[in-house]
Length: 265
Ligand code: DGL
Image 1 (cartoon, helix red, strand yellow):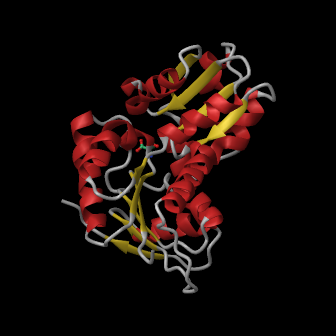
Image 2: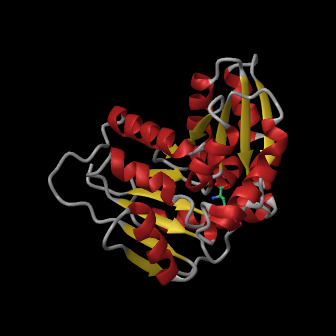
Image 3: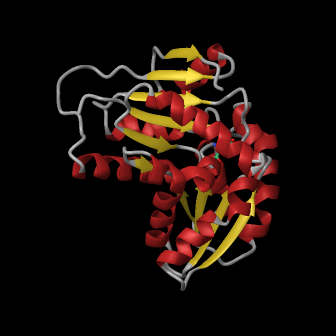
């Protein structure tokens, strides 16, 4: 079907999901909204996250999207179920795919999850994991200092190393053998997290898994685009469009990115 996939995030983090979508589904058109003016969502009350997320969804619905991807863990935790109920198009979040991948990866049934305060306090990963397999032990930890690092483009070096080492200490003291990066910003820190966690811990990036779920759903619902036109990816940001453009080019390895600044209400 020749309609775009809508992708929303609180900011630039959802681009880690877009990069996997482009890699796995290169013919599909994507319309993305990053609510960069109001990022981060992690520390915000649930009511605010819900209101902001619905503003993004309603904006995208005016573009006749064929599927909605909530590429933000915090927004997925709050809005996924009601979006599935209210919308007539398929809706995919990032929590279920990440949970499934961790359940597949773990050998000792000890799974770690790191995310924003909002995601961790919601208990959404814990619920999802134990609903599928109640033998697993889930260790959850909020790492609020990681998002600012990524937003500043600090993925390596002394500051990043110190912040990530300190942040992960409590969860690495447990017996986990797989660690879900339950925040769309964290995959940018994945090489560092892997180095600090060591080889015994498998790192799970929900972006890869989410793109796989999108792909499977498009196929099963007969919504895949099978024509020959070149996809036109469109990005909206509520904050600075030039900053978003710079990050999108860098993360998506694209020469040209069309970014438009919008105001959501
Ligand atoms: N995109 C958010 C998430 O995946 C992280 C950034 C934020 O706090 O808004 O939870």
